[in-house]
Each structure stands twice: as C-alpha cells, then as structure tokens.
Length: 249
Image 1 (spheres, rainbow, N blue to C red):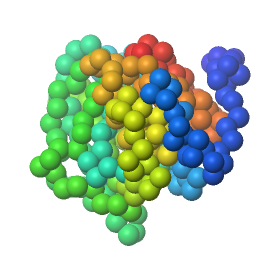
Image 2: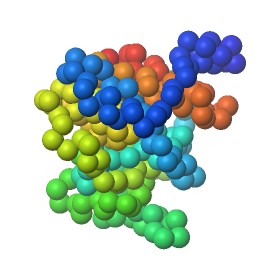
Image 3: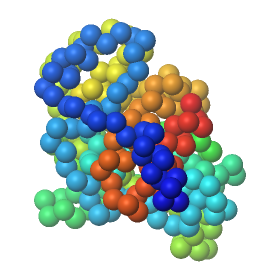
Image 4: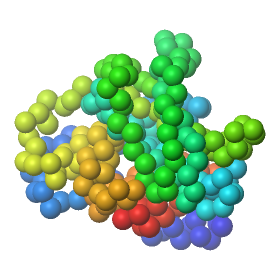
C-alpha cells in the first residue's frame, strides 16, 4: 500500500501557486477550458464530524466506499443558498438512503434542519439540489451534510455514512455577469474557490450517474490538492477520489 501511495503522489502532486491574479485570469477562460479548482485563500479546517463511517466498500463490503464528493482538507464553499450536493454510491443494488442537513451553532454544535430526506441509492454519482420546500442556506453560515445508505434496517451498525462541511459565501462581484455560456460556469466557479457550484455546474453537462469530462477534472484536482495536505491515513480516500474521477468520466 505504501509503494502504491508514493507512486500515486509522485504521479499526481504538483505545485499550486495561488495569487490574487488567478481570479482575474480566469475571467478570460474560453468555453473549451477545463476547470482547475483553487482552494479558498482563507481555508478553514473541517470539523471532526466530516469523513466516512461504516463497513469498507459498499453494503457488500468491497470496492470504493460511499464517498462525499467534497473537500475534506478544508471547508468547501458555495455562493448558492440552494447548492447541489453530490456523492459516489458503490453498490449496484438499490438500497434505502437518507440525506440530512445540519447547521453549526455559535458553539460549534450541530442542529438538524428539518426531517431527513428519503432517497433510493443508485450506483455511480448521485446528486441532490437543496429542495425548494427546505429553508435556504444563510450566507456566512457553515453546515454539515450527511448521506447514509441503510444496508440493513435491523442493524444500524451496517449503515454506510459520508459527511462533509459546506460554507455559504457571497458571490464574488468579479463573477457577476461574466459567464459566457453554461458550458464555462464550472471553470469560473472553480477559480473562485466555489467547489460546490463548480461541481454542480459540471454535473449538469454529464450523463446521469457520471462525472463528465469537467467533473472528472475537478475531482482529480481535488485528489491532487488533498494528497499534499491530508495525513497518512487519508491516502486511501485520495486514491478513491482519483479512481472515481477515472472510472466515471
């Protein structure tokens, strides 16, 4: 595993220089360009609640596990009050699934927002825009979202769980009115450090349950970025992100 990890890092890690001119340069991206995710300059560490839990792999215990397609080395950002959440489902069989959204209070404790949303799992990439019957997210607030596959309703310990943080920020004024067409929105959002908006737009261009070319590039960007920042025990997750990016293009 160590040799495989070092080989992965050697092949994928590259130096990223993030300067104030990056956003300005991004405004001349052509529709044919591919997204290149730039993390926020004021990165915030994620909470201890983020990550994955449950048996390895899927309900059958093998393969890549249920995975939130979101940063884990920092809090991913959005400028949308109704963002799109995305995750990878490993199993080919349909299982009951639940989505939960929590808000952090001033003391860093989680408060559940509304009732869980019931879903049915579908293999590959799943997405969920925040439904219209749910309250909009608030600018400046941080939330935690969670997806759970109920492998065995009679055995909660078999549940597969994936969680990630999300923070709502103001839309950068430099982006307003700058989009050429829908095909390049993802590029602008990625350069502006808006992970959720960049991936959400990319997935609109992809086939159902797939990442598409832009989405795959974004996920590979995230894997490379986090390979340089996460601790040793997270290398497996990084390799999983890279495999998802390669296999679900």
